[in-house]
Length: 410
Image (cartoon, rainbow, N blue to C red; front, top):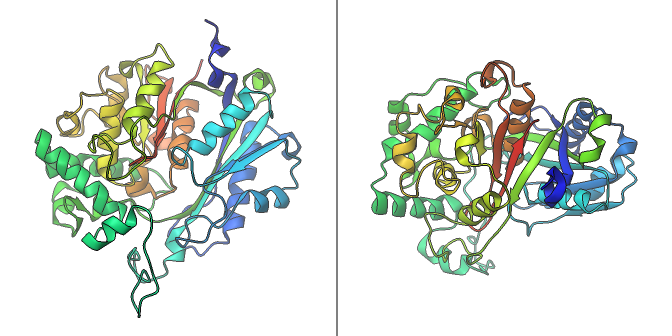
């Protein structure tokens, strides 16, 4: 089998870019997006005239506030791109599904270089009064709101938010496997430690176990520090054909395997095993497409919209057995930056994840994985045998949404 016998191996990550990231910086969303996109094109050593594909998630939408606001059309026109292929939309296997689409387009020859972007400005959109409740404006003031889809069954029970649904999944894991809050805390504590040396991170103040346990609860067993922090920022990634490697500014990050499967029900609350979610299927598909194993992975940048999702990803990828995630992360040594050099351990969310670095909604994990593999992470750079790591995972999604990328450098 040659490198390119599997479709995704015909594509590589050639460059990444990121705008300013902050809280309530009151940005122009298109401005943030263009900053990230131009930075990614320059990072890859390309020109805007080389870009013939464009992909994003979820497209231009103004609800909930700040969730997007910039779509394909705005970026296409602002950069005066001449495109052979483009795609953007909500019904994808997680936020990184847009990148998986780009990989497929490049691998099948529809285009040569795809600019993928994701922009959020939720921190500014929510204003100065703190994180907005998802129930605000959702049906009070005389009626007129009628829930549809699965929300018609969750709202009557006071469960309008993913915090409620993921909290119930975490409680099931606690009940079934004996996982504790003190164990789950290490996801947040590890992220904060990494964010302390990330100059773009939202939260950089050191956090102790007592700080974690004393903060207010959001949806049992999830406390404030188990929930991602709204941010303003944009991230861009360039997906290029593998044969273009000689024309790029740096050796590309190669895509070893992708997982996008959803083999269970497409449901937040009716999945067959709520302690695994769609993460189980995406991770399994990824491993089905490679000879590599979890023990060979140095870094794992895993979605943490809520801390329990990260624990579920660790189990799904086989860093530990199902139900053993609590014991695996307990104490933090197996997921620290230094753990990359120890077989059976993995450096987790090296930039601080969304819990501390800010909710860039999936794309931040792929950006960080590539920066680490290129050895360009600065003070937080992970070292393996005196050099940067060579094998990493980037994954995003929770509930019925999940996409995973296994990445490597030659």
